[in-house]
Image (cartoon, rainbow, N blue to C red; front, side):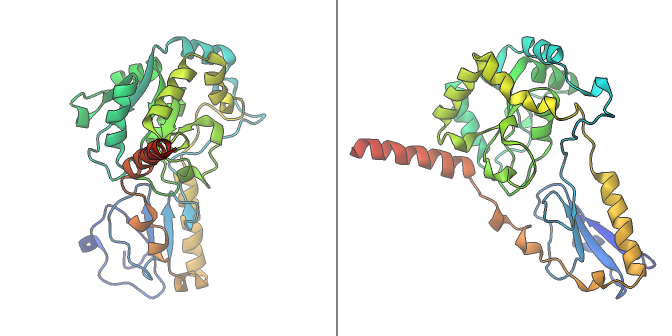
Length: 292
């Protein structure tokens, strides 16, 4: 590391693992695809590699890959394939949860939805583990996947969302505004906060389950995007190399520092979103009705 032009810190590293000495021309770079409570000091890192679009190097968990004239036919969903996949679906909604008592408050909403509709929950938090075979079977047999993240933060979209799309399941997220700036079309997912209550969301999902045409409208993306899309790691590595070469040319990059608390602090996240936004809004509506 003493001879490196650029040093990459992963979010999982502890401060004790950091280099003890830094040459003036070295550039430390912070990287993350996950929200975490790792140390994020200001005026230390020269660049960031993360899921937020305003990172120095933008590396979302996944991105849609547009269909082009060069796209192989097997990478394009046919209407027959989509209809066949739809015929396998018998149950309403699915959720896999391994991180219990998440800051987003999703557990509260999940429990309420289970009282209102058919919602199958698997994972460590529910005492029902689901291996890869189970994972595939459950996705194939459900219409919707509750892609509730453990935290509600700007542009924080993980594999929960993308796994649903890969299996032609409609993802349901907690907050629509979280996806602003990600480039994800609005018509590929459902947002719980569009309804303001668990009751409203449950009724909407049950209605869509019975309306094939409306349900299929959530898969219009299959006409524009490939079945599989690539991760951005190779592109990120190329950009890192470019940064390193700039350093060798005595570029001014090393004089710039990232203000980590602009995006990478909990103040940008909404704790207990499910409880505070969905349930309080619903309670407010009920109170208003009582006053009328």
